[in-house]
Amino acid sequence: MSNALIVHKAHLPKSLLGVRAAQYVRMSTDRQQYSIQNQAAVIAAYAHAHNFTLVRTYKDEGESGLLIKNRTGLLQLLEDVESNQADFGHLLVYDVSRWGRFQDVDESAHYEFVCRRAGIKVAYCAEQFENDGSMLASIVKNIKRVMAAEYSRELSAKVYAGQCRFARLGYKPCGRAGYALVRELVDEKMQTRRVMKKGERKYILTDHIRIRPGDPKEIAVVKWIFERFLDVRSETVIAWELNRKGLASSTGVPWTRAAVGIVLRNESYIGNLVFNRKSQKLRQAAVRNPPEQWIRTEGCIEPIIDREIFFRVKKIIEERRVDLSEQEMLVRLRRTLLKEGRLTPAIIDRTPGLPCSATCQIHFGSFRNLYRLLGYTPKRNYEYLDARPLWSELRSKLVQQVAAAIRAAGGRIGSGGWSDCLRVDGTACLSVRAARWTPGRKPSHAPHWSIQRETCLPDGWIAAIRLAEHNTTVLDYVLLPTDGKVRRTIRFSESSRARRGIASFKTIDGLVHAITRRLTKPDPASRATQKPRSKRPKAPHLKTSNIHRRRRRPANRF
Image (cartoon, rainbow, N blue to C red; front, top):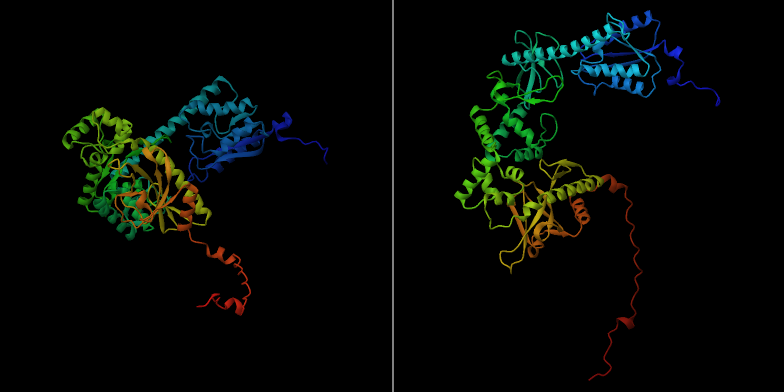
C-alpha cells in the first residue's frame, strides 16, 4: 500500500526504545576462543533480568583495545548513534575495559558520553556498581579506566622482558625469519616438531621457535649475493640481476636495493641472532634502539656465510656511510680540493671519509652552492645540475605514459629492478634517461648529447629526453637499442645520430608509439579474429595491338 505509514527505526516510540538494547563485545586476540561467548552470556543474563530485548550486536574480534582505528564494530556503533539511526535505548557492555585500554583514559569516557548525549543509557553488566551517574559510579569508572590502561602497560613490559630473555637463550621471539631461513618449532627437550608457516603462531607455552637454514636454492642465492657484492659493491646491480633471473625476495615481491641491503646486514647468516634493534610498544610508532640495547646471541644458528666474507661486506657498507656535520663536511671537502686540485662528484664518491655526492647535494642544495662555499670555480659548466629535478619529473611522466600504452596494447609490465626502468613481457627492458646537451670544445665544433647510464644497463632500449641548449627545455626524444655492453656515458651528435641507429621523435606521442610497436608482440588470438584482408581484383589484361607494338619508323630513310 502506497499510503501506509512506515515507522522508521530511528523514530520508534520512547516506550518501545526503553526495552530495546544493543550489546557491544570485544576480544583482544583471536586466541581467546570463548571470550565473545562469555561476554554474550553475561550480557544476556543481565538483559533477561531487566526485561531488555537484544536487537543488535556490535563486536570486534581479535582487535586490541589500545586503538580504535581497526575496530569496525565500535566505529559502526558510534556512527549509528551520532547519525540518529540507533533503534535501541540501552547499550550493554561487559565491563569498563571493553571500551578499550586506551592510554588516555578520557578517550573511553568520551565514547560513553557520545552514547549518553544521544539518549542511550550504558550499562556494565559484569561490574559491581550501577552506572547511574552518581559520584561513586563516576569515581569507580575512572579508576577502572586507569586500571585498564595500566594493565596494558604492565603486560607490555612483561612481554618485552620475556622476549628479551628468550632471545638471549637463542630463540626467535617474534618477526620473520629472513630470506633462506625458516622458523622451526621445538619442544622443551629441543626436539623438532615442525617448520612453521608464514603467520603461524605457537600455542603451547613450553614450545619455542628457533631459526635454521631453509631452502638450499635460497641459500645458494644468499651466498651469491655476498660474493657479487664484493665485486660490484652495488645493491642496485644485485637487485636488477636477481629480478632478471626471475627470483623473488622473502616477501614474494621483486628485489629492491633495500631488500638486498637487509640480506647483507643480517647476522643470522653467520649464526648470530640479533634482537631489539627496533621496539614498538603499546601500538605506538616503532623506535630504533641504540646498539648498546641490542641483544646479540652468537652461535645459535647454523651459519650460511663465512664470517670473513660477512665482515668484509660490513666494512664496505660502513665506510660508505659517514655521519658528519656540514662544517666538518666543508673541512674535508676543502682538504680534498687542495689535494686533487679540483673537485667533481666522481672525486667525492671515490674519496674515503667523504659523504657521497648525493648527500652533499642534499645538504648544500646544489654543487654550485657547494663550490661557492668552498671558494672554488670549476672549469666545467655545472648548470645542468640545477635542472636535474626537471629531468626526474619528465622521466617519471614518460615512464607512466609508456607503461599505460604498453598495457593498452596487451603487454605485461614489470619492474626492471631500477628506477625509471620497465621490463616488458618478462624479456625486453626499457630504460628512460635524459640526454644532456653539451657545447663543443671549440666555438666551431657542433654540440653533442650525452646519456649517463646506470652501473649495469639492461639489454633492450633506451628512451631519452633530448634537452635543448642549457638543458632547461626539451628539444625532442630519441630511442636507441643497447646490448648491455655500452660505455658508462653514451655520446652522440646530430650528425652521428642517424649513423648510429638513434631514432628521433618530435613529440612524446611519437616516441610512445614507436616503443609500443617495438616492445609489444601482437596477440595471436587477436590476429586470429581479424578479418583477412581482401585482395584487390586485378585489372583485365589487355593485348596490345600490332600498331602499338610496332616500332615507329623514322619518316625519312637515308
